[in-house]
Image (cartoon, rainbow, N blue to C red; front, side):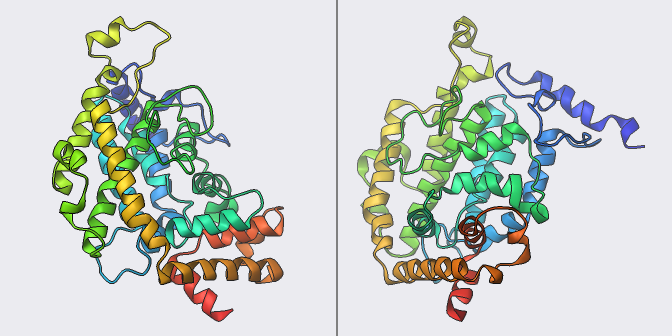
Length: 357
């Protein structure tokens, strides 16, 4: 009966009204393994649902964003961060007449590969594991291989591309990170992926400021005036300023502007900020690195987190038989399996296991 209602096909027909620069679900490059389309959901809606119902997504609620073991209920976690990124990205995608479902799926899945203890955990695994560790690559490994009892989620190419290219490791200055270009490291290949990438920055810059104020590390009037005078003096004002600027500066992607219709065939519209807003955003990020991130890296709790990560890595490499069965399904070397197991841990679970060993 459902198949006769053509629900998915009607949703796909609605996508025909999107910008010429949008990715339409029926034009997806496909999945790693072919499968029958869902009679109700488009390909990207299906990807979103698979991410939301995954174990890795649930575990994000107990993974640190910045502050390790904070005393309070309102600090941001990887889960709430992903939800905020999704909300911001969907607003921008809808305004720019792009594919909101694709943008949402990328946003919700972009941080699945984050380690326990925030960026500290990532740094330690990157130091210990010879090939290196990057959370965006781990996110792709999770959806391709580790989830669903080792079968992976079998997501579309476009969602996978947005997930793996949402971050440039070690990047401290924002430049062309919101643009979609040809395939290369750290460059997304869809405008929807570009929106998720730029929304990630908008979200964390603002909620990390809130968390730092909540923790008593900084006060609102400590923020650089060059940034707050332009963007605003509250979380709400800054988010609104950033989102409005991105929509205004990226308007040609809608296909509704004269500038878009006059552009030559080799020039593709991009998701960008104005120069002034980009400089203000960089000023806030630089402030956070100096006053918050670097300070947190020196705290006692952070040192303990580093010690736990090293203990776990050393112990399980010496005792591979102690790994859960699901992490021994694939023919990877021991170190790779250990990294997969540790990266999937929540802060609390990593601490408990560390105490046992």
